[in-house]
Every structure is written in C-alpha cells, then in structure tokens.
Length: 250
Image 1 (tube, rainbow, N blue to C red):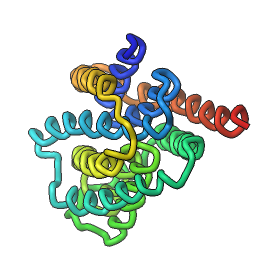
Image 2 (cartoon, one colour):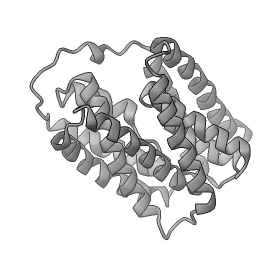
Image 3 (tube, rainbow, N blue to C red):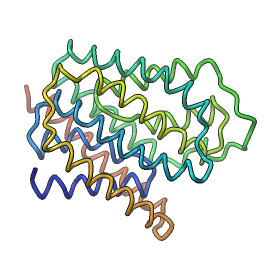
C-alpha cells in the first residue's frame, strides 16, 4: 500500500463525511489506476470499503434517530438480492465493460450533485413503502454487485419519493441499505476473486478516519460549494474512465 493510496482513502472518507455520499464511487478507480489492481478485484475490494465506512455513518445517524429500520430492511432485502445477482453477472462481462459502466454511473452521479435536488424540498409525510421501492432496490443492488458502487445517489431520492421519508431520515436509512447490499455483493465475490487483505484493511481504516473528520467539519464548510466542486471532479473522472476504456483501450 502506497502513501498516495492511503491519502486517497482518507479523501474518499472525508468526502463521505462532508457530503453524505459520492466519495465511495471513486474507490474502484483508485484501486485500478493508482494501486494497480485488476478491475474485477477492484470492484470486489471496493465493497467492504464502502460498506464499513457506511456502517460508521449509520452509527452517527442512529444516535440521532434518523435510521428507519423497517424501511431499510424492505429496501435492503431487495438490494441484497440484486447485489448477489450483480456479482454473479460480473463473471460474464469483462473488466473493461465494468469500468465503462462505472464511468457512466459516475457521470450520472455528478449530474445529480450539480443540480439542487427537488426531492430535498418534499414535505414530511407518513412513511409508506411504494411497491416500486423493491424494484429500485433490486436495480441498485445489481449495480453494487456489478461495478462496486453503494448507490446512495439513487437510494436517497427513492426513500424520499417512494418511502416518504424526510431527507435526513433518508440519508441515514440509505447508509444502512448500503451496508446490507455491499455485504451481499462481497459475499458473492469471496472465493471467486482474490482479495488483497493487506491493502484492503489499511485502506478501509484510512477511509473511516476520513469520514470521522468529515463529519466534524461538515457544519463549518459550505455544503453547496463542496457538492458542486466534487461533482466537477466526478465529471472529469467519469469522462476519463470512458475515454480510457472506449477509445484508448481500442
């Protein structure tokens, strides 16, 4: 594990603490282009990083009463099934295909961060699960197992619009869903992909340190400016992934 890798792990955790999401989507590119792992190993190793750092976030939201467990179990059960299936599907596609899909997802995440989310202004209502939430959960899980993303940029609006949760509850609940679906995806990869534990463990610990620091700084820094700046970074990385795997690789 290089010093640069640990520094980037810290930044990933920091962005999660400051922005509540988005940073974990960079884990796979860091594993591939900085630490030199095969894309399939990178996807598998990203899952525990995303899951464990999200678990730290769950603890903070849990203490504040912002985690709706019944909704998380409903959404998360569908996401877990999708994540396990997505990991199986990953065996049938090339690592290059996985990186192209990830590049597209990163661009979508960047676009969602650049906009002021309309769903954040939805008034509080009595929580009620729309059956469509199961379909969305399954789809998010497939993406998790296939390309290693937590899917928070999809889960949060789904919990607000379909689960009728308040924004802060949706953020806390989404982290528990992410813990569940990344655990299922990682379980499907065990024994299939070789895991470099000597790299994975310190990387995860530094990401946890970053999320703890970010959680302390979040009230002192302008959230809108941070979100838009990070979105620009995501745009650059998403375009680079597509260029590298659709143009250069050919």
